[in-house]
Length: 338
Image 1 (cartoon, rainbow, N blue to C red):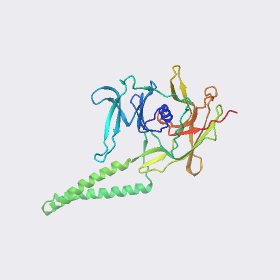
Image 2 (tube, one colour):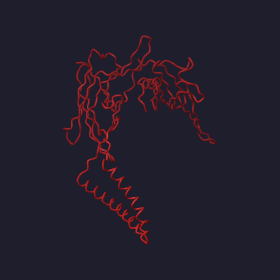
Image 3 (cartoon, one colour):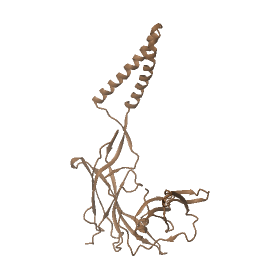
Image 4 (cartoon, rainbow, N blue to C red):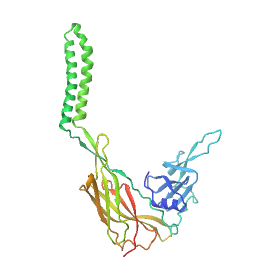
């Protein structure tokens, strides 16, 4: 599921609901999410919303089935089953760009209810979204011996089939060797070539991943003071023809989520990066675990603490895919200044 705008979670929180499945339009302007059996549609640019009751979002299209152009939301409604007819589904298309004037309503004011609880993302395992590299498989002496033996067996049967064909050329009853030599030579010669091509330069995928992750972020966080972050993890076991390794570096960002108002009285939820550091991999830990450690700090001049609705959290990103969503999100407890 794509990453939704934080204002969507806040609107759902104000209605005492939990957001479910969601989707985003190709241009990123419109977002739709299932909330309490209804579909909540949000215009992020205009900061407007619409709630479609009794339907579920299924995706965005560029036009309706009758040919009307513009961004439309495809939703699905389900009728209740009866004793005579089973339940059935009905697809509908909701036009968004050319909607009526009373279709949209303004976002509710969250300044009294506050922000919803932070949805932490604390997975035990993670695999990088960046393209995985491949490498040539290095064979040991025993594997090379087994490879040569297998090649010799395949070559022997291929040569035997060729020899049987030469016997058949002598004529007479020896033509019977053709029935054996031709299929044996054809099959084992192909098998020999395929075996050499596929195993001589055999390659495997190098999967960048972590397992058993645990993030230490201290007992609390103070604005203006350094915060030490320590991610302890291990390299997961390889599956099939692959090799796993830990990433060389991880980007750790200190984030602040707050409600921002404009001169027209509208609001939006903003995630702001206050500091970022790149933690390098340390392989000197015990039991084969890896450690990533760094310090981040939020300057007091740029991060006021007078807003009680402000939330602080840490977001961990893969440096090989900086535009991908954070693979770990952990909340921070704000402590009073000393």
